[in-house]
Structure formats: C-alpha cells, structure tokens
View 1 (tube, one colour):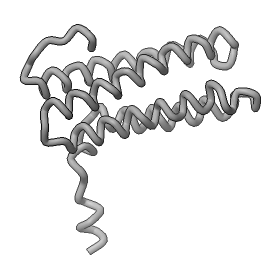
View 2 (view 1 turned 30 degrees about the horizontal axis):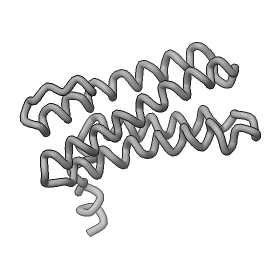
View 3 (view 1 turned 180 degrees about the horizontal axis):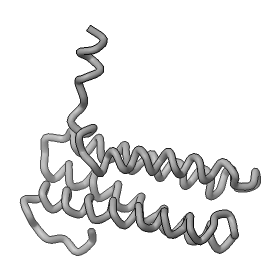
View 4 (view 1 turned 180 degrees about the vertical axis):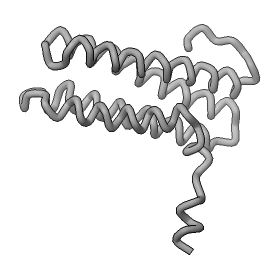
Length: 132
C-alpha cells in the first residue's frame, strides 16, 4: 500500500517548472542561511517567502480547472520570480552573495520565467501577453 502511494503524484509534480521551483526554493534557503541576523526580517524572509510562493502558485494554478485561473496563478508565480531577481541584485550590492551566486540565481529565474510564460500562453489558448 505504501509503495502504491509513493508512486502516485499530484499533477503539478510532473511539471518541470514546479520541480525547478522546489529545488530553487531549497537553494534560496541554503543561500540565505549565511545572511546576517539583521537581515532576518528583510531579505532573508522576503527571498524565502517569494521562493516558496513560486512553487505554491504553480501547484495551485495547475489544479485549477478554469484556464483563466490557471494563467492568473502562473502570472503570480512569474511576479514572485521577478521580485526575487530584484532582491538578489540588492543582496549582491550588499555583498551578501557572490557574483557567481547572483549569476546562478538569475539564470534559474530566467529559465523558470520562460517556462511560466509558456504555461500561461498555453492556459490562455496560445494568446500572446507581453506582461509575461
């Protein structure tokens, strides 16, 4: 019985972008562990919450039956990624992360943004929307 349950997955777990988002959230937690204590309620918390929000909104969007609802949740995840891109720049300027860490984070974010844009377009039936 346990083996059968382990083989079952939620639909969103099959999405590569969700898998990437979960790995990225884990990376964000690792990166922010070394942030100074005075950043606990600043960049540390903001980055962690935004990274979890990406994966959670992808999961919620994938579970919606309305294509418009799906697109909206993918758009929210996209917005959280852009928010994190900004926060990583600030973290870099404050010497909280290295240039290599910034580059890796940006590359991961850009890849997920492209994937979410595709999911949003697919949800809207191929409609082009320049906001994502």
